Amino acid sequence: MRRKNTRQVFENVEVVDAGAKGKTIGKAPDGRVIFLTNTVPGDVVDVMTTKKRKAYFEGVATKFHTFSDKRTTPVCEHFGVCGGCKWQDMGYEHQLFYKQKEVENNLRRIGHLELPKTSSIIGSKKQYFYRNKMEFSFSDSRWLTLEEINSGKEIDNKNALGFHIPGMWDKILDIKKCHLQEDPSNAIRLEIKDFAIKNNLSFFNPRNQWGMLRTVMIRTSSTGEIMVMVQFYENDLEKRELLMNHLALSFPEITSLLYVINQKQNDTIYDQEIICYSGRDHIFEEMEGLQFKINAKSFYQTNSDQAYELYKVTRDFAGLTGNELVYDLYTGTGTIAQFVAKKAKKVIGIEAVPEAIADAKANAKRNKIDNVDFFVGDMKNVFNPTFIKEHGRPDLIITDPPRDGMHAAVVQQILSIAPEKVVYVSCNSATQARDLEMMKDDYEILKVQPVDMFPQTHHVENVVLLKKRTK
Image (cartoon, rainbow, N blue to C red; front, side, top):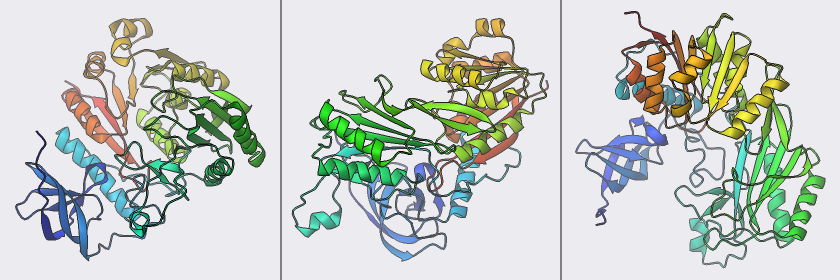
């Protein structure tokens, strides 16, 4: 039975905090929490509820009585509709404050952990144009603004190239200028759209599964290289060649021009053949003289500058002397493993994605690093007593799991191995706290260092140094 949703209005609600997933927090007259989506801590607002639950409400501010002094003017014309940069209306110094607060609250409240004094969060020098990878979707039925709907005018051109509206898989917001990736990202995207419209290249319709143009991915690197990959649904050779040739001629700075023909129900490319139209099938990223080959399917931290800061913290926390055997769990393409290798005796990386391990091995060979080995497999299955017996008991474990955190079996294996130190890198301090709670009887937390990878959003990375307790 569908839950009855009775909307309520609360007046003069003070927004007192920022919570999980970028939402802000007020209190209803009965003391229940209200999670809000369009306010900043310090605002005083009238709220209309959109959901009612036993312990909380969800709602939206309908009238502002007082604007917070933490507010700032968003720079992007798409703010409030696009869901990508939900904190653009909050000053950056306040964003950092609430990110650090979230990390500390999660570790204490979820993990029930004793913490040392947390180091001040490392902010990003670039607060816009910091991403090295963006993906945009085509649609033949773009999201219409309220102004367009209420105008009563006939909308002739409904083609869009931009982002999904939050919570709507089939609605795309047409983006005029995105402030997340440096030029020529915007110029490339706009030229693709303009050329496609002028030459009658059809835009994708996800509901009916028709149309030629599906997505475009743009990757840039600190070395100045650019990758563009266009994803087609319909396999029209003449029109495909027309677009790809136009891109190659219009943007000779593109290092890697690729395409894929994907006629599946979803946009994922990991099981698709990537075809190189011109240039190389990869670009290079560089960090402290190390080169990392990035192809269309590679994972690489999407903020290159802050990835460097994150890895420096990880290496500093590791405190290597050159005599240690290090395990790097969830190694990905082996960036952390290679970054710390010159200060370790040996590093062993483990990762579930075969393509990532192939990249890791190729990168290590290119960088002439011979004290790293990489192994592929599901972490909870590969990382077992037999593996430890064969490769040695690590002095240090570095773990950088996905948002879901570590599998309980992996945590138990770390506890049974009992390395002297563990460095836990996390993009989700809630699951990090859950894992650390399982380890708190055996390990004490020596250092906590949040790192802001994604300005204008609520996301935050966190690094924790653990040392084995003496019993």
